[in-house]
Length: 277
Image (cartoon, rainbow, N blue to C red; front, side, top):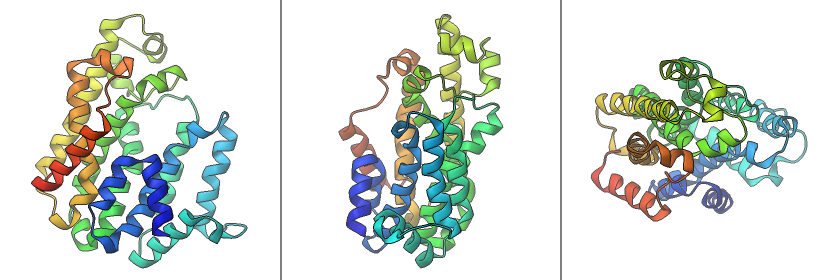
């Protein structure tokens, strides 16, 4: 079970794979299952050509968590690992169901809407994953760090959306909130058209700034307990991306923002050594 979930994680999310390996060994099976589940949801859009097959894939996980799965669940090691983690650590199922629902929007090209909507999306995906991992690592400490997880997840989500912006624009997706577009004199279509480079760069820089604001809020809430640190290690990758986007928005559009994998791993190892994200 552990090997299957870790193998899946290594293939589709190297950053959280490393975070998992830097966790206590007895916690790794549950963390690997949670992280692999999240990664599977996140990549559904990449695996389908139309929304309906994607909806069906997401419905499988919704049925699993609701106890309505048809067929042999044992045939899916990730499903077995996820259910075992939920049972072993008494994890709430509703945040996982909300995570699935949030990913439905990824299957379509509707704009994200307001800042509040973007924060809600990030909260139900990245923030929820941090909090669920924290519950596995140290349930008592996790409850006291919910605000940190909330802001850290938004910062992490924005960094991820900046990295994926070229792919999103190519298929007509837009995750920059309406308030930022309006402030820079853009709307959805003008951003996607990309004719006004100055305004386009301004919107990207403001979006990255929103991520930096949430990262600062997370860090202002105090230090994350050592017992929870591995849940926050992937967040350490957000700052370099956000800062790079603010300095060079052209790199965002050209898809040159992502640091090499060895640099990402070094950043996480450094965060683990310094005991802060």
